[in-house]
Image 1 (cartoon, one colour):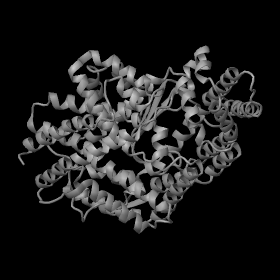
Image 2 (cartoon, rainbow, N blue to C red; image 1 turned 135 degrees about the horizontal axis):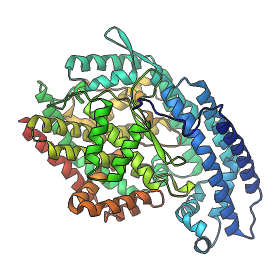
Image 3 (cartoon, rainbow, N blue to C red; image 1 turned 45 degrees about the horizontal axis):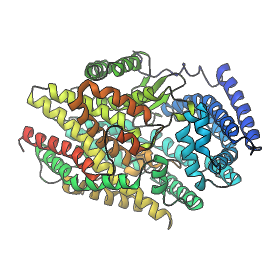
Image 4 (cartoon, helix red, strand yellow; image 1 turned 180 degrees about the horizontal axis):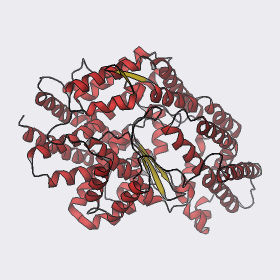
Amino acid sequence: MNKEWDLTPLYEGIDSEKFQNDLKALTEAVAAYNAFAADLSETDRGGVIRGGLELQERLMTLAGPMFEYASLRSSVNTADGEALDALSRLQKLLSDTSAADAAFRAYVGKTGGLEDLIAADPFLESYAYLLRTMKDDAKYVLDEKVEEALAKMNLSGGSAWENLQSYLTSTVEAEYRGRKMNLSAVRNLAYDPDPAVRKDAYDAEIACYDKIKDGVCFALNSLKQQVTTECEMRKGGSPLEMTLRASRMQKTTLDAMIQAIEEYLPVFWKYLRAKARILGYEGGLKWWDMFAPMGKNTAAYTVEDAKKYLIDHFKPFAPDMAEMMEHAFDDSWIDFYPHPGKVGGAFCANIASIKQSRVLTNFDGSFSDIVTLAHELGHAYHGMMIENHRPLNLDYSMPVAETASTFNETVVMNAALDEAADREIKLGLLESQLQDTTQIMCDIMSRYWFETAVFEKAREGFAFPDELCAMMKEAQKRGYGDGLDLETLNPYMWVCKSHYYSSGLSFYNFPYAFGGLFSAGLYAQYRKQGEAFLPKYRALLHATTVASVEDVAKMADIDLGDVDFWRSSLEIFKDRVELFLELAGT
């Protein structure tokens, strides 16, 4: 079993004949699309819309694999100049279609009788949801020349700032006990069973941020100011409103979820204080002890152990998922270990062109790493459920993006809890689950409030590092309450979290809470329905790219605007906290 992923199913290299031929074909496709958009006929609107979608399919089919290949290469080596150069060339090439894309969207937007055209052509019917959203969004599309200028300026603006944050956080060196470590490796020490190791790693992490905070601060400010300016130009409301629109999610859904979470935050604070008592002190938990392992679940796991654990636990739920996981391990879909130049965290890239995915982790052998793999392979399963859609129907929105991944976490953790007979093992498993749940409730809410504050500041001026740290601490105090020792927070979480650093993807925080609670509700249905649930689950995932968030939920008879649904999911976690307190004897 390889410990690094294999990208050769995409390309042998950037200088390979296949990559270069695809690049040439993409250049020709861009020219064809631009020529098409320069002369949009008024006489056969159905034929024109069909032609535009076919050209967009061609662009997507060519550009997608090249982008994935170059991006995946750069994620494991942020100093890979060849990959970065290829990404820059591809971004510039596709930015040349911005004016054409704006013209085509405006054309669709002003087309009368669109529903009749859709009904008359099976090809257009396959893109019915996309066309309807194009028509709805047309009022926010600017003049094609302005759209083109914004896209080109983004190459040296938002995209460049995003790359800067990634580069700085992947190359900075932390000084830990007299030796140098990359940021991902030192952050992984937060899961070490030795409290002294965790404390020293926390100190090393905090100290290393001072080396890069200024550069990352400029990246964050510039990105948020750019997004704010674009929202004002489009007259689309606030960045949050634009995000919700792009997410195909109603504000009433977000409001209902946040209301329920705020009501239940004290439940998670209670868990954190209990963990502090177990670790030997009163009051709130120290930041560096949040991921301290407990019970007997402190063993180190190998990659081979992780493979067996996941397959054994998922085969009873979904045999096709277990089979996919086996392919992921055996066919080199996963890049496991941290090293200098590799980005931190974890992600999954669905690659429909080869009907596979690629997963990046920074595996360190803890049980949490197994849960992370389950999470990312949930994304891979989601990708498998949508891979047979047409090329322009492969993107799901942010909220539902975390549904399959978080559902997988729930499956593996609950199965492990159900079969654990030993009290200490059960305590360790339960504590691991509550660690993760507390992150997607308390920490995610702190990130949501922090990003809201940063956007508010962006309308007024520049936030220097000290101000950003103060904003982060206030958000953490609000999210964690008295569950943490407020003197030992991490004010630099804005530096290391890549989710803040995208001009095209704001508020990539609340989807994690959404995924956690929505998947808990789905899991409750699975518990009741057994095998009968799986076809509905597959159909729900399949629909995520061609339906609103609310309509997807309706497939499972869930009303997302009802705060009681969110409360019912949170009650599941409240019961987990009470069981933890019982097992821990606190």
